[in-house]
Length: 435
Ligand code: 4AD
Ligand code: MG
Image (tube, rainbow, N blue to C red):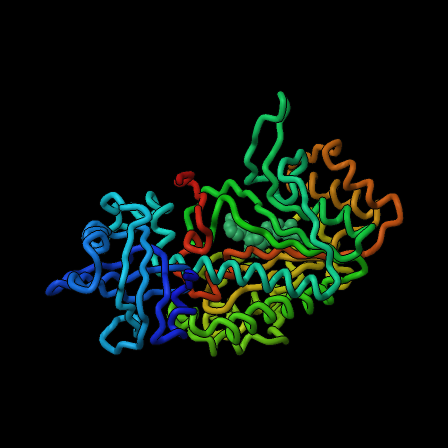
């Protein structure tokens, strides 16, 4: 007999089918053992009646502790008394593996659940989030693939910092220093000169000391890079990408969202255009709201929250002061205090989900800007390590732009999670490297 999944078995009322999965809950009452079986598609109540099954089946049901792997054969029917809406009356029941006493019970601390993450991933919540994560990856790729992008695979071990360099994880590479990449941008830039529109979807590493609900030390970074794009065109692409993911989630995964208590109508509203505020405008909004910020100040969590808490859609904040942005961003010719870039902020205080910019594509301008950054910030680039990237500006350079989207930030926002660690199966944070 074919083994079905719970979702398929529900459509075969009245016929004998087989299921396999794990024991989610169990109780016994008057010669009947009720097991709630979990498989990837859902839950099914199995009723194993002592007089209706053989001794072997009954003994197996007795032994089947929580999280044992089991197989059951029987007739499935709608049953309003079942917590799952359906019930299988078992003819046969067997153990694939009897679980040891499961170390997770009902009320447990967050720390313990993180220590037992390898098991907690079986919880209803984590199952739902992990499915949603996979769909969000899928729709992000789907959007870019349809737009003619090529997916590229950048190296993880690098010599040159991609961003500020302040949060790099250092490692030994056969006796010389290497770093875990904090952004694949520099490598994506190299590939637009052949493939024109590319994206990498890879882990980025940030040695973030700060313990916030938005920072991971290892996160998945989607980084598109486009030849011939200015930042305005890049922003239009970003809002379409984010809207595509939101629309797909809202229209194709209503049940999943409902189970997680997420209002699909909020995601349906995510459509272009998103509101655009220059840094200058954002600064006056904040100062009108009572913050005493000076021109040039960066925004913190409380400012991001104030700007987005009443927004239904993400917003862009563009053209930031050059002092608080990386060296590769071109000066804005209309206001030389600023650079051509934008951040996308998620609604309701979920924070920055995208950082993007134009890239300096002319050699003289790049060298001049690197010199200036060294002088004003008192840092020293190891030009040797950047030579290959600077070189790209010598051989048929073109204007290009790109951006980086933190996928766990998007997951946190779209699923309205309290903490970013639940958006990734095995989170790495300053206080966690296990499991
Ligand atoms: O703003 P960031 O630092 O930009 C870059 O790395 C650019 N080189 C990207 C590019 O243009 N290709 O990071 C981009 C995004 C942020 O907007 C945020 O969503 C996410 O990466 N991010 C993090 N996500 C989780 N944990 C962290 N510690 C993160 N740091 C950044
Ligand atoms: Mg940023």
